[in-house]
Length: 458
Image (cartoon, rainbow, N blue to C red; front, side, top):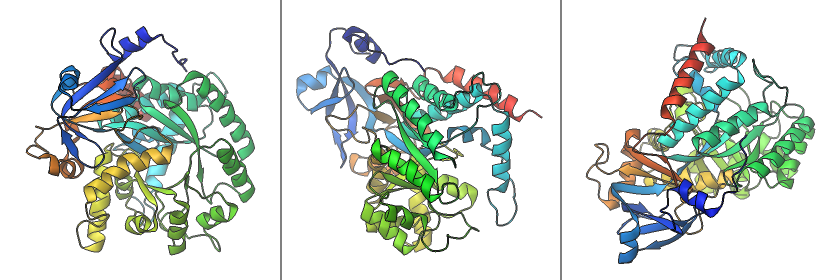
């Protein structure tokens, strides 16, 4: 992994694109989303560290800010659940499978691809997925990473090799990364490896560029004793941890206590915990999540692609649980579409509009930003003083949202925006996407195409 750059101010100014001698940079879009509404005639500024310092309507500040004509600025989206290697499966499992087993063919294809992938191909798949996220306005991602042996072609048995490839991919693309390392059956060596990686990451990267968390598959993988090892390490390091806690359709809930009840009994269910697309939840599970002020991450596109249901979002919200969103298997990478499909699925179930909230656009955008950031322990999620200048802009004249005045703009963006309307993306005040294109677009796509040919060649 490349080392963190302790650059002098002059180099930091050059990297950020700030005029020489300036101590801050500013932007003036046609309108900016401030958390409650879109406001016009408002500029916002960031210092050389990329943190937002102020908002202003002063004429001198408006004149000094970079004009973003015909664009609206919104806080960067937060993708709470990603498995980047699954990007290689897109379009390769879209055929009829065995009745009652929606994941059988998909799992077989994943096993085939994973068995053939080299370390470089894992890197190429992650770069491709992360670049697509930026192009969709996503500025931070939680990568739910299963521990894997050294892939084919790896020249080292270093246990953190694959994890480091994913970190390298995120760094090159420029997206913020929470690497959620999923525990295998033997937790003790896993915790040692994660601790070694944590020390390395903290030396080489800024704290809010790359950080670590933990993941788990419950109850199938970890015994109670191994679960304690993982959960106690997460608590000691104040890490976020995410887990699959409910069985898929066709499987039964475990006898006696559910995984969530077991976590609560052990004292490991709290505000740092996120349950990932739980399919079957009891009423008691819903209450436990709400009481703990935990989060649930839903991935509606993946759920519908697999032909499975999703969690009862309206019950979870009523109980006090936060709802975040993820792209999971990357059948598509479009977090705003994840948001609208969640509400649409609830409308079908309940036969009415506005199920998730009376003003669903606001609640859904909150899920895609603020709640996702809280789930991952990220510093972004909102455009506020003290937070990083992580934001994306949309073309107000794109046909999908053209004609929307500020009062109706958020609903247009959440329920109708086409991904092509995402124009520019900044992370920490540095522009990562310009006019809908990433600077490394050609090399990333080219290498991914070649990787796909090698993985899927007969």
